[in-house]
Image: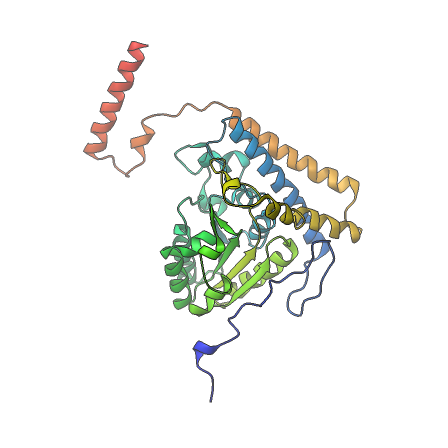
Length: 367
């Protein structure tokens, strides 16, 4: 007698996360996933170098008052880079507020990527042109939107795949449940990437779930789950690439849990010394994704001084573009507060704009 679907073990993730390159840069064999070609790893390493520089520059801009807030992905750059590189041009990416590196790696201009974090009223880039949704600040809301886009693509017979990113804290939200349940029931081409960085602001993972892993949640919805070393960009490219192509071929959704660590505070407004030990943070420095990939490429003879210099120069060009863009003074039009709320402005909005315009005029006259 066949086992009922509820007992299917093929949906369960591995006991240990998939790893293809260890902390020392040594290649490890895997019976399912193969390491990407060296050329692909070089491309990924260049993106990692650029991603780290983006994080450094963004933190500096916050200290200078040029960014209102910045949720750093320092230490998580492998997840960011792999998420962008795993997709084709026609696919969609749904990022969180922490995923600026993924957005830029996928092709958005750095200036446009940081408009929202500067405190402007719009996302800064055209989502349709780049096939990237605006950064989502509320937890897990973008997952529902991602499933909707995937459902529409399937209904139209397109080969589009949607990759939706979230953090471990988002898995405690109702939207997470609704998105995964809908995706599985309707068998839509969406891959959920959970960056498990151990903390939802100050709340540790142990207070988020009692499951063996976040990837184990997948079986409850009837989709496969997988765990991957979130600091191993080779493993991420392999696991995400497999899930994306499986979804493209009609295999349905998947949940990927990337085990990584948030090396810096939640945002510049957070004091992480209040809830985690410095020794814990230092232990993760040995697992740095850039250090790991660099060691591997050097051992393979694939990385030389000239290539490293080229990667560093490209990263510095991006940092310069960020500085130049954020140092330009912006003079917003106050009427924009009312201009884009509805397709046609309501009488109430007209009245509110008239009131604000009068107040601004009196202030200017008084000055």
